[in-house]
Image 1 (cartoon, rainbow over the protein chains, first blue to last red):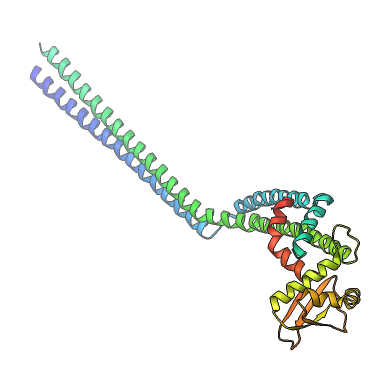
Image 2 (image 1 turned 180 degrees about the horizontal axis):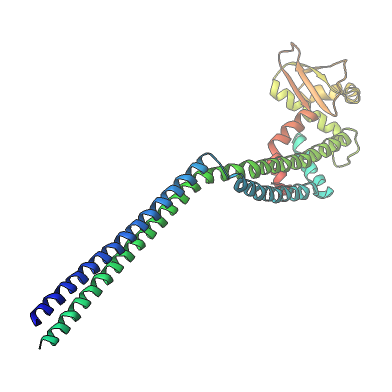
Length: 110
Length: 207
């Protein structure tokens, strides 16, 4: 009777181990499936985004922002040049006369 | 004795079961971590590729708009410089006009005129000349024709009958008309202006 019990226990434990192995395999398989899903989703998303970029789809907003930024920069550039031009034009009259006197001397024969 | 054996066996099997499950859990975690790393790598590569495509678009937008502004700015700057240099040129011409009218006590225009004729003679190396000038200068030269000839070492000089519309100076031509030197203020001003434009601009601090 005792021997029978031991054998019966052994069988149950063996099944327990088999079940544990099965569960472990299931956990790994599920993780692998999830990983495959993650990678597939990433690849699909990547492909979509690249196609959108290549066809310039959805980039209008992005470009609009860049254009607005460039326009602001352009305004600053124009302002800087306008200031420089203004400074040049604001040369005092006496400087012009000085330069003219120098040029007169160059025009005249020595 | 049998109960001890049972307990040990159960304990060992439970431990083994726990180990199986724990290992599986770790493997699963590693798989998911690796997947996440791969996902990140794919996204980074994608972003990089998109940046390459869009980046050129952005640069084109920037270059078009900012580049145009820079070009326009440089044009305005150049215009401002030219305006100032033109003002110098106009002022110079006015100075020369004043000089030719004898209004500048620093210079003797009669002497200037003579030097201009001598300079032309040295350039042309002729024997006989026809000199033309504006109406006022022709009248002056007519009165001093002897002095002019003397300054040219006795060379024969005739005066043109047609006055030129010039501020000052002379146009000297050899008698057969093969060589002419325009030694006028206008011509000399153009030459001097070209030669000294950079120097003048520097002096004025516009470059």
